[in-house]
Length: 141
Image (tube, rainbow, N blue to C red; front, side, top):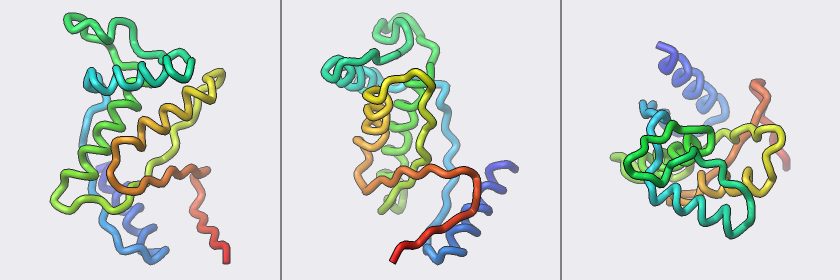
């Protein structure tokens, strides 16, 4: 019920600003760990840039089932967005992602690397948006 209401609000907002688009709700779980290749790629990027990856303890041990934390959930979200934007019946031509709110005390390098991880695997243009829960449209001419 809640997803249907959110889908209806988004469809209404798109029609208000005259964007011909479709809203598709995809149910997926962020409680699963991302693929090991995604985790390794993120960890190598964190070592190269020089910040703590903050991945869950024991993520690289195959026998240990890690409990996802905030970073691994965002990496799983990146996998899902890439998968569903490219492999649907009608591939996406543009993807909008709400910016995740950075944690207080987290490094700017880590935040930017998470944004890069969110958009790297998506084959179409990606727009990060952030709002304050107000319906506002600003046009500059």
